[in-house]
Length: 487
Image (tube, rainbow, N blue to C red; front, top):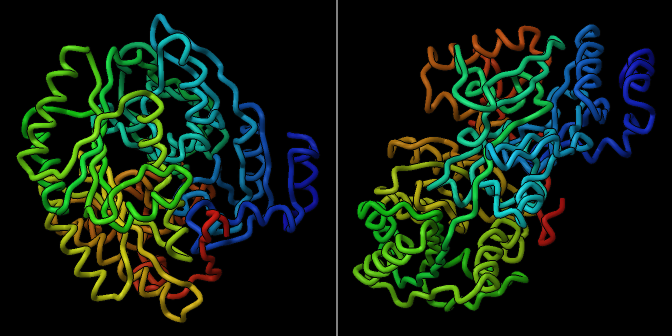
């Protein structure tokens, strides 16, 4: 519980209606979409301006009270979980579009502005915002900034850091800095690059300027059905080897196909195929037609059963909605599931999928795979039942083994979901002690008191985070995700 004087000061800053201290209401903020661990915040405060964020941070810093920023809570690694019972600074009410500059192809938004809303705001003008996480209908650009979010179209267009050009940030000291440059290259050190993907551990972003793009002249979308996963995997590598960079190249295996076709977005996938590729080509009309034929040729060379071409925008939207329903759709075939997020060289897809299949059999747990195949970003979803004693621990252990396989194959423990608290124990598997110390030293420059989102992203030397993550001790609160995606 916060001291009464602090509560009164926060009320003075944001107003009584923008502060929650009632434990029955703050429980809604005890985790993000990583629901395996929950911790109660000491309060939730809703600023509406940069000046209010500054005043809140200075108030809490003066009293030595930890705090963390939060967006829409769609993060999948616990980055917004109040591990230290922090005051949650929710940026949900900082949701304004501050500027839209079509001539210079820039937009400036507050951090609580929803990703998909930006594209909708300028759709009639022929522009869009490229980063498209599966949660784009609800996730915020501030949250995307914190996690360096990707999405299906990052193969061609890049992740969030490739689209953010400038930002206003409140440091943990309460100072306000502007990093990057709205037009042209910034001078000096790339502090913007440091802040994007820092998971709210270095400061709180209060305004973000991003690139906006004109819609492509032409788009062609394919569904390719394969009898063998290996053939689908080889197709991905061969498409890129041809010098073709699709706007997106997504893959689902058989278990995932069965799950998504039970959702409201029923495509009608054949029951007996092992894999489906969703490939999208965009650009100038002539190049799209040429590349589309080359993609079809590659699919045929790899024993594709059938290739379907979207006949209109409605069919294309159905296919994409089916793909983006993948995570919640698993709730239709399993009472609980653990989402993983590793990266491998795309040429290793077949080998890694075979290894995941072997590990699935070893642990006795089903694994459904959906991933951004073009850039090797895997999303194995481990199915388990939390009501069965020991299954959560088995799922966690299997998840760790899968991430180790990714690193051993020359990849990474995360591609777009971040480290948060879920993967913090795995950082030492990928980085040396000196690497981790350098990252911690950088964090200490921005956040010397350790009050801003402590315990996330980078493990401190000698910290006991490994006892929770690496050795799979049961978390304080365990929650299953049901068919409705709720807890």
